[in-house]
Image (cartoon, rainbow, N blue to C red; front, top):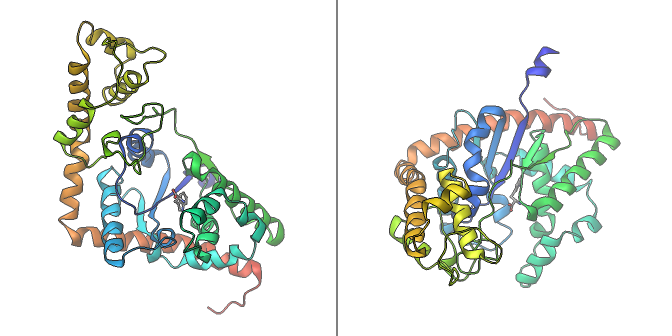
Length: 336
Ligand code: TRP
C-alpha cells in the first residue's frame, strides 16, 4: 500500500526525429521537461518508427535520429533521471502495436484528421503505416502504463484514440492498461511568427525569418529579431492590435521572467530598434547553453551510444512485463 502511495506518476512522450525545435516549442514545452523529471518518472522516446511513415533518405534519417536524441539531452533530459531511448531499439512497441491493432476499428482510424491531411499531402504514398500510426502511438504509451502524456493540440485526437483502445481492451480482457491523460503544462507562453504575428511560430514556415530555431547562432537570432514585423507607433507597450510588439514582449517576458509592466518601463522612451536588439541578445544568450551542450554531445558519439543503449534496455525491462501480461490476457500460449 505505502509503495502505491509513493509511486511517482509516469510521463511518456514521443518526439519525431525531424530536425530541431523552434523557440515556440522551447518556451511552450521543451524547457519544462528538465524540471518534470523531479516530479515524475519520465520516459522520452525518439519515435523513428513513426517517422518512417513518410519516405526518408536512410543516411539522413539515421543522422537526424541521433541528432534528435542529442538535442533531447541538450535540452535538459538527464539519462540517469529519465529513460531516454530510440523507439526502434525496443521491440515491445511493434509487438504491442499488433495486439492493439486487433482492438482498433478501420472506421476509427479513417476518421483521424492527421491521416486525412497526410494522405492528401503525399497521395503517392498512402502506406499502411500512415494509416495505423495512431495504434503505434497508443502502443508507445500503453506499453509503460503511462499516466500522463504531454501533447500539443494536433495530437489530442490520437491520445483520445489511445484512451479508447485502452478502455476497450480492459473491458474485453480484464483491467490491465492505465488509461492515459493529457498533460497540460502550466500556462506556457504562445510564441507567434516574427513575420506574421497572428500566426503561430512554425518550423515548416516557408519564410525562415519568421522562425527562431533553438540551434540558430547568435547573429542569426539577432538578425531575425531585427527584421521582426511590428507597427508604426514606436512605443513598447502591450496593446490590442500591436500583435508584433505583443509577441516580442511575450518572448522577452518568458526568457527574463520580467512582467509586462517592468518591460514597458524598461523601454520607456526607447525605440523599437533598441527593444528588438535587446530581445535578440537575450534570447540568444538564453539558448546558448543548449547549443553548446548539443555540440559537445554530438562530438561524443560513444557517450551518446551508451546512453541510448542503456535507455532502450531500461525501457524494454518495463515494457516487456506489460507485453507478457497482454499476451496472457489475449490467450497467447505461454512458453517461458
Ligand atoms: N505523434 C506524435 C507527434 O507527431 C509523436 C508521438 C509518437 C508521441 N508516439 C507518442 C507523442 C506517444 C506522445 C506519446 O508529435
